[in-house]
Image (cartoon, rainbow, N blue to C red):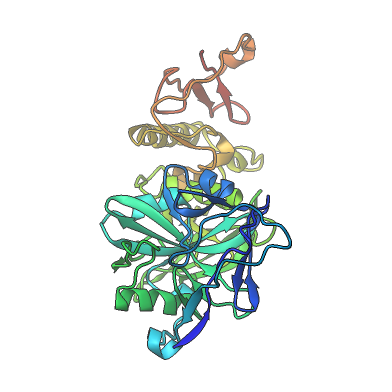
Amino acid sequence: MRKISAPTQISGRVSSRGYRWRCANEFSPTIPGLGYFPGGDGVATAELEERYPGSTFVVAEAPDSPSVKPRQRKSSPLTTPIKRLVQINCDEAGRVVRMIEDEPYYHGFMSREETEKIIKKEGEFLVRKTEVAGRHHFVITLMDQGNMKHFLIKRTSKKRLYWVNEFAFKTINDLIQYHLRNHEPLSPTGDVFLEKPCPKKEWQLNPEQIEPQVKIGEGAFGEVYKGLLQDGIWGARIPVAIKTLHSTNMTADDRIKFLQEANIMREFRHENVIRLHGVCTSKEPIMIVMELCPGGSLLSRLQDLKDQPSMVSKINYVYGAARGMAYLQTKEIIHRDIAARNCLLGENECVKISDFGLSFIGKTLREKKLKKVPLRLFLIRFRILVPAESTADAGYFFDCLADGPKIVALGSS
């Protein structure tokens, strides 16, 4: 068992960028914006507090780590003794040869809100990826005495060892295995332990299951591909639509917004609402895998001058869209962007509501009252109206029979 120096504060110095830690003859990296809050759980940041509101976010210090002291004069000697981290070799840790992405407890990029939906049992834990101040970090999230706790996995700068409390490892796999097998605490107080890995859900896909093939579109966050999905280990390969997120220049908020659509779609089961097969967040690029609709968008179909749909077909489009919206109402989903471009045509031209990027979960969403409404909005041949306060899209009507379907907001204050 090899000892390396544990982080300790040098001269009690605190700056706007936080304070630096010392490890033997090396300095461990300082997270930008890191600061110390006396009397709290140790180290925290404004960004972490903002990203994890209402949670117990713990960045564990080494045992008996000193509290912050006032800045000393240059002539004053360094009085804080250097603490020690214990480096655990691979054999002692359990020698885990798998990649972190292959571990059942690793859930990839995930927000705090999503972990609360997944971890339901006392003692369950998972490892996820997050972003702080533009840098990717790994976090251990677990339920302890009914509370969600988050432990940031730190690294030393030269040897690049991973550590949480007092033991350092070459890999995150070894860190988890050692704490789990030896019942070593994660917290400096010695009362928080890893107990049961939280397994991935059925909708959390592995990248090996997904095969993008042909690019069929592009959006604000990335590209859309037609491809294949391996449905389980022995299942068939089924055609799917795959939304990918750009791997570069994407912030944590961009990733959260991109995955928000999948989070809303997860429980949908209706023939007139697009179905989600799953998401893949363990590797870049992040992917959302959905049902493939071979007919394309409803708008393109209606604007096809060479093969105009019949009146019967148009009525069927309206009927399918109405059924889909009625189903969303039962789920208390406000779509907020209903339009022909966001309705897709599946097999036998079955209309399916799609694109939930702007959707809202709740019973009521009130729009500002429109002072003037053009008369032409009322001169349409067919419309579907919903109440101004509704779990469906408040005050929208769907003009699917006129030229170029439109959605118009008619909210009330």
